[in-house]
Image (cartoon, rainbow, N blue to C red; front, side, top):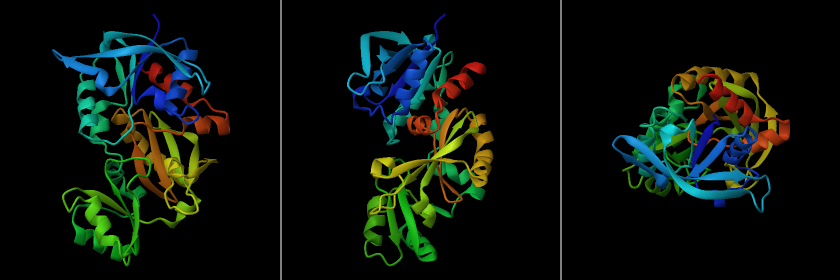
Length: 312
């Protein structure tokens, strides 16, 4: 019987296929002869404890002008599929959480990543499970605590807990005239928690993305190097990228985190490492597959699919 795989994702017409990891997965699934289905979170529903979806069979082509074709939509119980990949980008808001509640009802098909673990493992807060790997971190909504943290380290980075792509991330110094207003804005006047991290000067050398498959790192990282007029190592914020082999410290961090990822059913994960420090653990929709595949002549999607088919 032909393997069937569904991708719960953002609108397919809006993706950039040169950089889109979900598209790389679709290409590999198609190469294997699998049936590929496309849907968005609002196409899901739950009835009598069973999850259904209105979804379309999709075919893909590595051509930026005509890269996908959708067939007539069908309605199907998700348990009738083999694999379901959650590839919806943050923000990690209540709609995202509700999606994970629905997908947690899928019992026969394998959901990657585990919906409960996506919900439990906030991409910023999850790093605090591994303090030996991280810079000093403060999570608070209190202005005075955040100001004290800035005073201790002179320069800090403050970010919301549910964002992505470098959005609303601030680099602040203790004497910055915008320190108070930035804290007030990010915490919504002291009502919402934010994360503050000790600023890591090695960001100038790049924010490395290390991809993990079933708790094991691939051998390379994509270093995202900030633009000259920015401090953020995010491609969406204008950073450039280069491929690098993993250092001993990168491997040590991966080995610290890997067993917990396996235990939680977090099969495909992206670690962000700046200098010697783990700064984020991306569990929702990790990226950088297409870039690493091109630089190092890899097929990361094939390795991922081999992993999920070998233990089912």
